[in-house]
Image 1: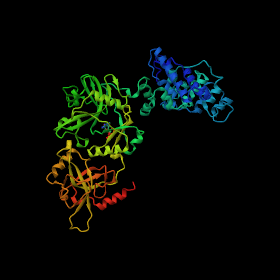
Image 2: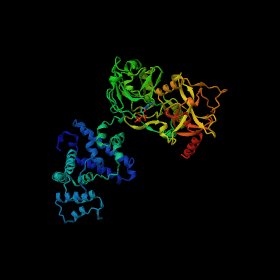
Image 3: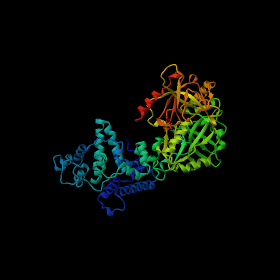
Image 4: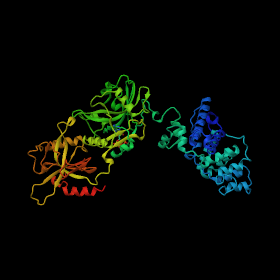
Length: 613
Ligand code: ATP
């Protein structure tokens, strides 16, 4: 590796001696009695690190140089530095003995080689400490190298070490150079850097925190101190505000899986928001003056598809007027969904429509469902709490049915409200809900910053699917008006003889799991078979609880459906005195005969099997 531009960096103006002074001051804090300290030990140590960062930045400023702190950070966190030196204590001892001409049979040489053996000096067992005592009368105090030279030689050692035997000569040269040009105290710290254990009594997390409040988050995410230093170089900028600029895709924030009965605990008993979980594709819309850009979750540019301006694409011409004239620059985050303009409803992914080419389907259009805002004119909003961001959404855009709509935040406090909302969502044929902390800031590309996705899939569930028969139907309301949108499904009641009329009992009402296309198909297939349900003349084969359908169907004309559910719950609404919790239709089973549905006795068995879960 070349020794390039060493004099043009801040590291060439800061000595290794000053860095070692910092380390010495840090360890002295452990010796300082508590009453002589202003704050706790760790806070004092962090303050020393902060002062050194400041000194580094001031030096850079004075010479008009880049102030990236990485050259120091890698020495401060040697354990996380990716350089491998291949040097352990014994090898270093041999180098020291040779470079400083210590007779190999002398007491000092033996102390270095057997540094683990107990001696009278206080740093027994600590190789760097032992070395310091031996070197202090042999090395000059006035020597030092600058930070760049140290890093340069450590680079040389690492690169040469990787070459094996071929690099040995260069390793020797670099080590000797370091050993002959540093004072004893600096050599002590250099040895600790090489051995990758500074022993300064402050954890990596505290050092990262002293550098920047978001450093640990970025480190956990990137596993690179180099990236931490470059991304968070500006102490004034928070991580979640970085890279948020119109025209360039920002990685979206993600949700964590959660069970409905854990929400109160996760939110610490505070109020939270429940939102619809839109079932489309994640997209970001950027508005730059009158120009628009659209980015997918992975940052792919779909501007051509959705439209660069009011004259082009499948979305921009239809939403342009919904955006406030005051919103010159905007970044909105949301879900791009397919909307059926005839039926007036949002479709789901299961409907198998590619929202990016919605225009090729008859009566299907794109609808952008907005649930967040990252930037409004010159203000980056990612560091504002969600409760403030949602206000901005309402300020900067209005809704146009089937083109642009925003997510509604239902305020809630209890797990029961989550269960109810999930039930309602499943009933409306959605796959789940999203729960959000109103105080959460927007953390690009992070999961677990206060957003929780709640779906029945995250709950244990019954072990088996159930093959149930459709016994009745319910008219859809609102957007599904005119269709049979939900079904009453049930079981075959066990009977002795074969000749008797077969009886069926209701078990649950189901409204989710099938696509809109499937619903239309089965509405069409069964259209002629439905009969109006009247309490007075209810069919004798049908055993019902309190729950009555709008329509009923002869079992022989009906269809079997395969159903998945989370558990069995007591309920008077259905004949067996219980019902299924979060039932979802997995498949229509036209391949099965109507009398092949699950029997009440089989259901009782399944219920007993699952009761211990
Ligand atoms: P993930 O996106 O979490 O990696 P995934 O792609 O499997 O997982 P889901 O688990 O189904 O998706 O749900 C998360 C996705 O739900 C989000 O990424 C987002 O695209 C979508 N979503 C829909 N509605 C909302 C909403 N109101 N708030 C946040 N995200 C929503």
